[in-house]
Length: 442
Image (spheres, rainbow, N blue to C red):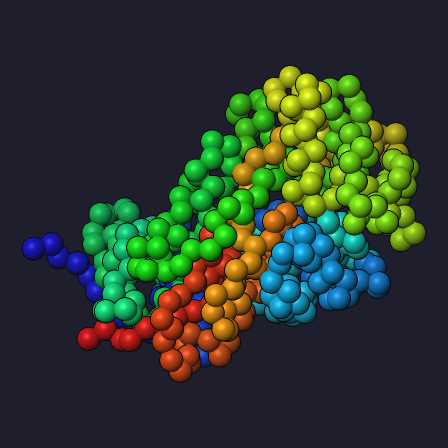
């Protein structure tokens, strides 16, 4: 008979990204004995790819911003199929999560008067993304892991969970193995949070790391969970496609937020050709106005390159299909024109952004797995807020926001649920009210 180690917890979190770690921290703060199982090394989750920043309506750069504007942007970006309550909670609570991370040691970029700096991003009416240069996700994950470790959370790194264990209709634990040694492990738990990330590796070109193979969805499905809205998959507009050595790498949206533009093979800024009706009043009508917006002019409207990701990705795909794409099947993300706008631009760009100012070839590529709506439990607050054409950049802060909703959650839930909901990413199931308490295994 095979031998295996047994570990006992009140709450077991499968996945160690932003949502999983934040959920673990909240459960631990409530007095639960918490364990985290990570498929890779701690700190290597896909949260580190949240380069652009964390969206929170703090109004540090533009005082016209507030949670209501953020909420409206979210609903519009999701084509109004979002779960409105979810969008409202996220917009209201995101600033608190940013300040919480700061209190735990995250070092955000600053304005001249010492406030947390916020930058422009696609789909956001005002500068909203709190950031740490172009490595925000890395700062978030390091902050969360440090705080979690100091709370005494047990972390099992490089472990893969292969099945959830059930006693009747109740999930009572998980079974997996140590990836380094091949030893079997059993994790008994009164409650389990699935925060395992998405399905990016189902695509040839993706920014997702190797771990994102849909493990969480499979675990939940085979345990009897109901998977929802599986068709909502997001494609980021700007991923490198050439040369092959960098294929799939993310080109952060912040490049366009600082003035980068999209051009087809003829050099035309094609995004001006297709501005949705519900964004026309908020979008610049000419390049000069768009440039002024990126430089902080509050009276200017945002350039069309900063429309929502789903729309920008469709426009890129349209250009390629029409034969106006780049030689390798994308379009050009051009920062060269900034030379005409900024004194000593070459030196500025080398210092702040890149080693050269030539256009790079980018195309849409898989980024995140999305869900839209379809709430099927009375108190479930699942990932309905993003919807088709996900409210971009909210994801960069949504893991910590949703994990923080664990308060009053798993460890103190009064009754088990007949079924639990698992989202397609780690940001989904870590949401505090999307949980299922299970009976302690004998």
